[in-house]
Length: 181
Image 1 (cartoon, helix red, strand yellow):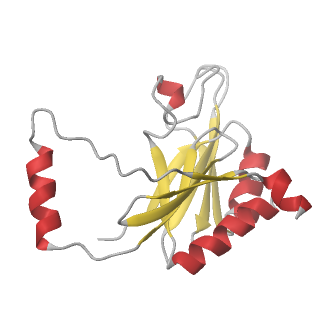
Image 2: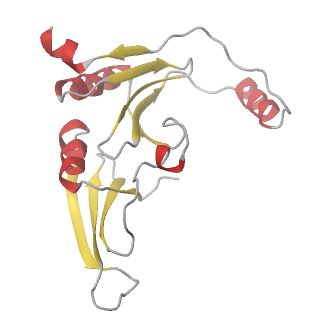
């Protein structure tokens, strides 16, 4: 089942808007500005909920919250919790390896460094948005089989599963190097 939207919070709406429109290629479709549901004595906190069409009928949304009672916070959905940056992330679907390559080129053209990983069953490119949230474009490169499902079920409940060590090194693309080519 498809999702309607996924939402994250930003500390810098202008930079976040630039990233998701220019670097990601999403289209701004709706902004809802409304009072926050928690009224405060002496002032009315408010928020903007900003929606971007990701190109497939699903949306990505960003919260721009204005509430002095919240104070300072780190909007990063992984490192803000003390987790590795790759743990909590947002992965968008690329249609093919050619589509993935075009999205990598778009990031590089926007001055964004890119990490590419061939996982054996899918290939992904990664970067971070202005809120230090890891963003991924991913395309599956093969169909799953009954053997894959059986292996997944076995590994799911293994006390200590064997670790994959396929030897595939990630490829790093530097925007500065790309721009000089």
